[in-house]
Length: 201
Length: 100
Image (tube, rainbow over all chains, first blue to last red; front, top):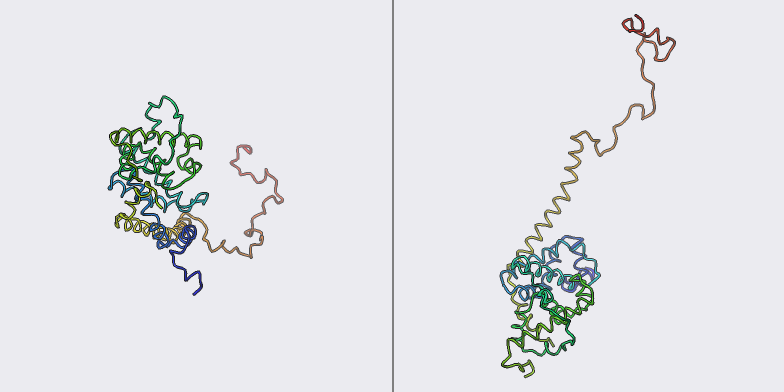
């Protein structure tokens, strides 16, 4: 048995698993990709859709999309970024269709009379208590929520977020700034009585 | 260390329902089998269809007599060769309007 044959599938990189699946059409290799990303994808779906049943359907559809488009993956970005981009775009489309709400980003509200002048430091969001953060994110428009998740959970660069959402870097920078302002104002509305509690306290 | 966003999302990462995996792998297997069936049968089906509508068989062109070389047509005895000694007028039939 050669050393490469002795390698377990879990030791393969994403690219190697994709190449092996495309060559052999053996679902064992795809199963390993699924095992690697199922948790992240399901968590993103449920964070975006706030409904376990919809998240279950969305996770399934996202992985079927990934499977059907695996041969089109060009490795311009990492596989994880590609999978997450399919996930975010699928969830945003699902929200548009199911809830029939045009409000995806703060800028869609039409109440944004002027550009935010001062950027809110990341620490303001990152130091919120988890329960409070969950409440704030629940009340954010889904597009803003997706952008903050890409920035603070997936640690994606502005350019990558722009590629995922099909927007320019400057537009993404502005949307991040607006999303942070929106999150801050939701926090202020929800916790006006006890505004100082953070994860450090 | 995970930040509060990661912790918030991480709560769901271990709660993926098992049935999702089964459904996805079932569909992946079905697609894989379907692909193999197409790969196996479609070329033969196309070949059969081509033969039914008069196409040539894929085993190559039909063998020609005389090894594919030119051979002159066989003229039956008693018939003058075309373009031979007779003129156009001599070859016309009596019912030809020019002759009447």
